[in-house]
Length: 396
Image (tube, rainbow, N blue to C red):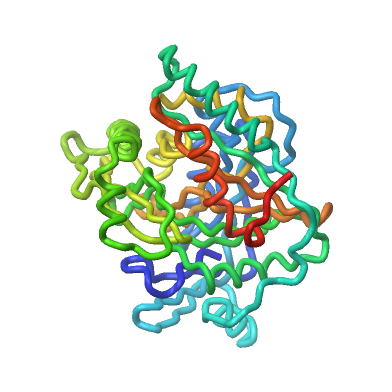
């Protein structure tokens, strides 16, 4: 399920796949051609995800972290239910047949419901990095920046709680209705249930027209007050964060786009989500005729906004500093419609529920640059994690 809540201009479609008919389990060594063969085998969307772990292999970054999370998982469905919140129109497509009740259930999942916070979300939250350890990680990152190994790096921590009675789908629907963001996604991979509440697009390809919308620059704000927006957009630190990533994205997509077509038509735009002001830019281009959306996706993966600059060196440092595996976090949820049509998110504000262990994992991070303050970066990281925490809950 990829579900954009109502109210997001230009992001009004929700997709639900019913009755999987084929699937591709992506492994660390899965070649691009295998993904293309599956995604383009027949008309109709393929839904799924690629994990950050798969990106490590693409960028040649070794990791010794132990994780059984899949490198990626794609599915094709007998039925796709599409709902457009702007027009209130629902369409059903696909080669298979489904009962009226299944379609009704899919429609209900797209309709705002006054869910209360799920009762099963309890248990002590354990962090892979304590407050002190995260701030020490920021200081070590600053040393790497001064030594010239990176000039921006996204440092994250992992938050886990044991809550075996949790209904993760109820949590997903509660968050979608109470804390809307443009790129919600739900996906089941064996015993693992991915629930993503991402505000960030990675790459969209619409009939060959490419759009990336990296987010960099964050400020806590209950409302999008004009004076706060101005403070964010005029901050030298936040401006540097976004501008560096925009340059990285331009470079990442240029090889697969027509020469001279890559542009930044909108820079330092601001939107309000999760009680935060987020700054982003539009990076556009035209896909080359001899390339397809999977070429573009894999050549740019994982997204620069959640790795850093330069990408490979930053990812090596991330793997050294973070004691946890990122798994799907900072990977991407995908809807591939054809060789020149695709949309994808950056899997931030994302959690995974393991039905075997009853553990809910989520992650959060912030971008570190040379003038970053360790305590401020920790507070920003925890602000981004609030969706999956109780008010004033402090991880241990």
